[in-house]
Length: 109
Image (cartoon, rainbow, N blue to C red; front, side, top):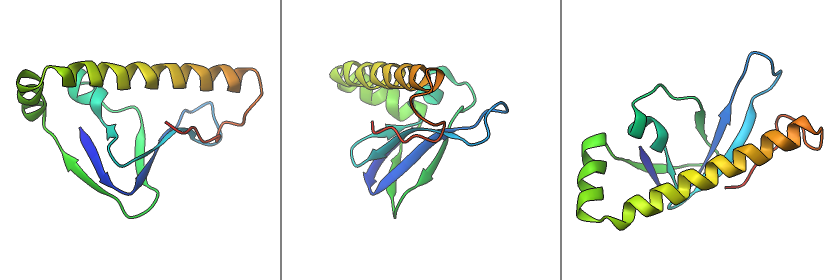
């Protein structure tokens, strides 16, 4: 998991049935990427690319576990982030299905 310290990154997902990748979010300072993979140990499903010079701090699964034990409120914050991402992705899929936005529409997180 990475905590963005400086800059911005674009999170997008490709699919064989789509011509272009779908931009899921543009994330900046104080936001995290890779939280799903670190929690469920499954392969990544999105590609993250720097939008501008970016600096990120890497947290291993062990470091995250230690932080969650030491600061239980982090678990609530992480659940909030994941819930928001799921809702945003669900809304984006609905907009694409309804033809209201193109597949490459940017979503701000």
